[in-house]
Image 1 (cartoon, rainbow, N blue to C red):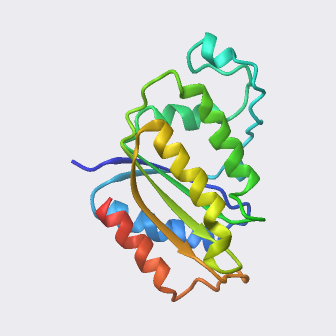
Image 2 (cartoon, rainbow, N blue to C red):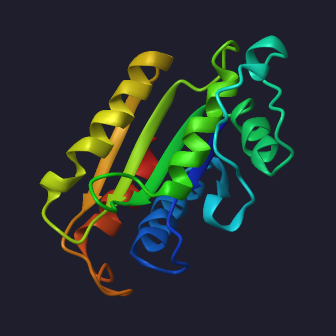
Length: 178
């Protein structure tokens, strides 16, 4: 039986390099019999965490009425989480970070997630991804999730520059093996 994988793809640019890297991962994961649910926070109405603590009083319930419950419900059924993002100014996109911050509502719960992976694209060398990778690894340590893999595709600027790059095959392989 395959895994239940949730992908949060943080790119605000549809059909860009991050979406193509994500699609390669999904293709590999589905070919291995896994169920994959993808969310694009940039296309959703997700407000920033207000730090009000309501979610800790009402376990997992946020006071905000937006689209985040769709993601939280999926995470409550997931074996694996995949975060995908272009790196903007040394970090994941604001759209993805909003969704990540809102998972705070689940900290008092024990999510079934056992592992997570990270897919990153960037316009510079891979050194600019270090803060995003560090954040990802801190999340894994906090949640006690295993690191399933990281794929970084550097030096991408135009919409189709990832086409034909080895990182697409790396993402597909990660999806198959996850």
